[in-house]
Length: 461
Image (cartoon, rainbow, N blue to C red; front, side, top):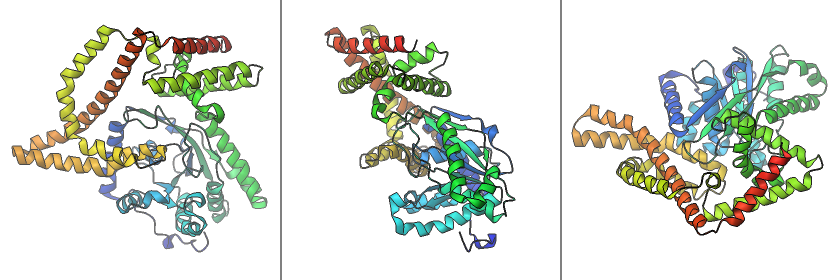
């Protein structure tokens, strides 16, 4: 960060200047309410006003995390925010221009771009220091990459070095705050799912300043450990990675019943998060309290049941709510009645729906699929689809009000398309379950499931 002491030498990204940015921010906010079913921004009052703030969060869903966090902090436009993102997100020229324009800065990582790229970080580090010295807010994800599961990876010290060195440049007169934050999704990959952003109470680095003067690494390590512990307590941190898939399956099946037993509403993501954290804590405690054999048998059964359910393309909920022929026929008729509307809605949004699907087939990192679904749609396919729809309706009808009405309807048609598709998949799974149940081919799965639930009822009582 040497050689960047003068603020005039730092060329900052345009950030939040001008009407263009404000309109774009409102557009992104509206897009989030179309993309997600419910959005929860919790404890925003914990963020101090007019303070140097570094927001530090777990990272599990690519750029979806950063966009949602920016909106959570600054939905009313009161804060000046910069976010730091992996440099490969800037490789597409259009995306790079837009990201820089709204204040997102690239950072090069050793594990992704190699040691030779690290010198490119000097500019971003200088801008980060400038923001922290001027009561700015900087968002950073210190796990270095997004995780592929609901667990907290190791936090690198890079953000701590940036924060402490900013304080050092102010002769330790500037108080730097770190705001531990967590994000949580009802589902990483689906559209019209729920998202939660929660802010913990900020931690001041001022008590560590004297230690930093004498032992820089020790101060960074101690403060980093504190931030990591807070984030871990806020999020769903499934540390038993050997049994992760079984635990994840259990929290979405038996965990629904567990939530009800303990006074949580599993339909509300904040309450489901609290229930899942408590559920995993109980399971993990059982492993160290003489019940390791029993709980491991539950995990083994859960793995078998989960794999078989996926193979048969049925859903766990059908075991409790067995589908009836009458309901299946009624729903089939309802799908038939609504199909013309679905077909119209699908064709109207085909440019929004299909490009992300085609691109995601080529991307091996499934945790980036949500980013492609959201970012590509928001920045490219939705504007393109809207322009085509507007001018098509205008050309056919000659009516600008009608063309504008079409634009208003398109988001609702998109939501209808997604919901129809989800409902159709659920209906097909119920049909399969009904056939298998009628033919007495699910007895083994019923036995395994009953054994899981009875064992957990006993162990968790």
